[in-house]
Image 1 (spheres, rainbow, N blue to C red):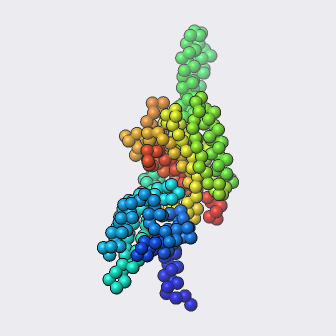
Image 2 (cartoon, protein in one colour):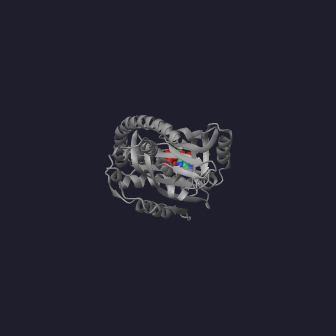
Image 3 (cartoon, rainbow, N blue to C red):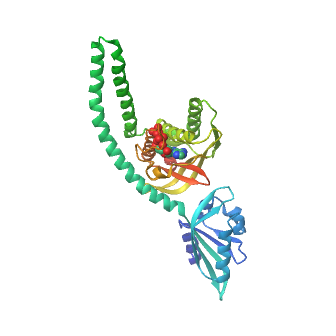
Length: 355
Ligand SMILES: Nc1ncnc2c1ncn2[C@@H]1O[C@H](COP(=O)(O)OP(=O)(O)OP(=O)(O)O)[C@@H](O)[C@H]1O
Ligand SMILES: [Mg+2]
């Protein structure tokens, strides 16, 4: 028979909120699984630590905990940036509650919720709407343009054969070339309608392949660093489509950085992430980080729409295609500006882990 203490423990252990308990000298007594996941630590490692050891250089937070302990009052803080020992930074909403025994605070309880997660869900909902509308309008438009295009090209070819004045061939040549260019453009817009063929895929092998393509197409040396998590398992995904996504994002980054700028590719695993209303036990995250200026503010909100571009020579299809392809894999691409760096993060469920 389970005691009420055991039941309480099991409840806390299964909460999606991170819960940490400190004694009155602010040494960590316990942390639940959600806390270990959020802070990327094991309870063994952090047990007994003080807040400033768990979150170095997060003095604002440390002071808020002390304030709550001394005043004996609950305190709520939103959107706090916490620096983790692994160098990452997370944004959390937090409730700090002193556990009062005989009028004195004996322990302090922290509840932390990932604030990025909330922002991400909001972004996701708007992304889904954008993508659905974009797909519909692009497909309708593509169909209407493609039909007459064949006729124009055919007529120009017939005209070419009939022309006696060879100087005029230049003009029919232009018509044919421009028809071909438009056709390729439309085909690119339509690529996302292909259903993904999901096979076993090693994401690091794909990343390295894309890096080699990017090196080959740039005359100058592109500085690309890697920070891969070698423990990532193979995923089930469409190789060609994932290559296209990473290539689009990496090309964008290359186009935005200075000659001596940096790009970093980071891979990692995240647990318990909801995407497209589905809770995934594991997802992989691929960050493509560059130290360029970021998306120009005037197009930031619409950058994932087709035909939105900040570049004179851009077609504005790269991000919209990438987003659609990743969504058809049950994932999502996020954009974020952090510490003067541009982050495009691909979130992909690792299907075979969850099945
Ligand atoms: N890493 C980045 N840094 C800064 N701005 C970016 C970055 N990636 C995309 N952008 C901005 O978002 C716009 C849209 O990107 P998108 O890839 O959709 O189209 P594009 O690069 O202009 O054209 P293309 O269809 O050839 O990819 C870009 O024109 C650029 O202004
Ligand atoms: Mg692009």
